[in-house]
Length: 556
Image (cartoon, rainbow, N blue to C red):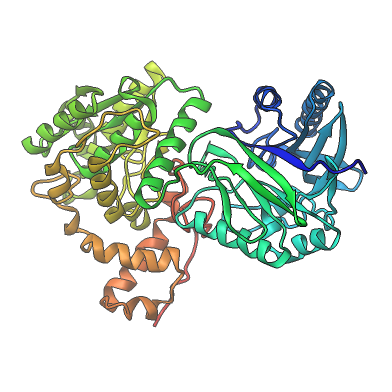
């Protein structure tokens, strides 16, 4: 073991890797190492599985992908021959014993050490046990003469991993993470890390990735804690950054003597930023030039358009008003005003002729029946056809605009308003849509590219929501008031509450039973819905996996 340095300069690399872009991620790492070397860093810490991106899912089961990751690591290791620094970076790693979620330690042109993730999460959005083997309890690594423990993400949520590192003499913990955003997670991470520090009296540096990946958004928010649990470094949310922290050995502990305390997000600001970054990365990483969406003059499409404009800039967003004979003049005016405030392209494509064509074809088959939902949904599906035709012609990705409340109870039309490639509101209940619309009107998204000010007309926020598929229609014709519906749904979806518990919240038993039934029946629709960013504790998608064919009903 080399003689310990009295000082350490550590660079936390909070960047936005792309899953599967091994060469691109390696080049991103090379650029970070050059910057770190120029800053005279001793140690450079990247996030979990940085080389392949997180979460890689079944991509790591492809042997060629794992081999390519090893080749990228060898290039980075060779690079350290000319740099006076040590690199800690995440990668999949295969040995005769299995496939591991690993970190490698690189210096002096070589791979100096490899450590494996011990605790593999297998809940909520995580299913690492499906693709990785658990590593043994890790031992510290000697870096710059310092005994450094490298628990990986989930490893710090269990005291046995940090306890093992502490008993083996770890003086500092470096924690690479791939921790996605959800409400409240920032405080949970900090509380967990603080508990590990209190137990071990060992300072901890937590490095998280940033960026959107399908239905997940990684918010960064990296930080460092002193051996007493004081937060000595705090990095911004939803922004890529490299940050230096300087440490000195004093009285038996590594003490942080200099580090940045950047501003972090909370509450509605964080939800909105997650929606913006997730959409931006979904569009850009998948190579779409722009997006297109239906702008109805209602609150859901208005907020979707605002998020899209903040994510991509107004020049990459096209809004279509597709009126039918049931569309009110107020909705026409509100949609036009909404697009003008956002600065997006705006076009009006009337659908009455399209609907009439479908109706003429179907009339002989519908003869003798009452007009109802089937006829109403022709309008929604006509709009979907127009949106998809323009998408096919110009390569724009279609955004759907339904919210979580509607998707929960099936108040959405397959191949109609559910038609598209991404849904920014997928994990927002209706009342949360209103909250974020008001927030955006009063605030500017710090990572946004859209205009400041009131971008959603107040009249859109104030008026009763309606699909406008028949005369004088409102959502409350078919659904209970949204505050009531959202409370029942939150209980069933987020809390998995028993039906008696939901009724005890003050809701009518017959209504609770009806909403439960609608929730289960709509599963087949949700399976066909596009992805959308996770914001709450249980999104429809990776979090909640109910069977489509399902006769179970909770009964009181």
